[in-house]
Length: 174
Image 1 (cartoon, rainbow, N blue to C red):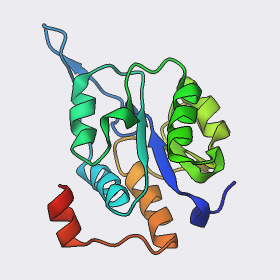
Image 2 (tube, helix red, strand yellow):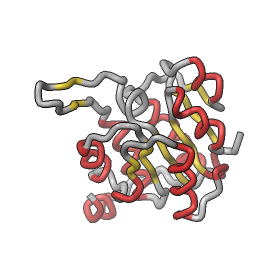
Image 3 (cartoon, rainbow, N blue to C red):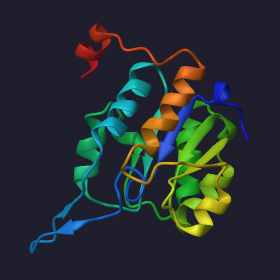
């Protein structure tokens, strides 16, 4: 496992990681998810402090793009409809000049396992499927959508002295 001080980027799945996995659907087929604001703030802190961040999800909902674009993730780093998460992870790493070992990846289900294994630190929420928990370097004490992402991103940034909130940067960026 990579040391927290060597992490230079973050990537994560959505359903079951940034959410509790529940999805509401209306009669028109619109899908609705609930996100934890503290997880989202950790993404903003990473963005403000120079860490590239990617969303790699099988979900295709544009609401995911809207939610995370508002947290500082550029559109090209939001991989919707991913069917080969490892290929998308490698694309993200290549575009930022990152080694796989320099990225922390959060995943909760079978399609995430190859990326959990490839990343420098693979994190699974406490309620992830067995295969994801077995593959992970860290099984979080927190379930998906309930602080898993926040806790571990904050740990990395604090270990590196980057957990700093600058109100001027925040006002400019968000």
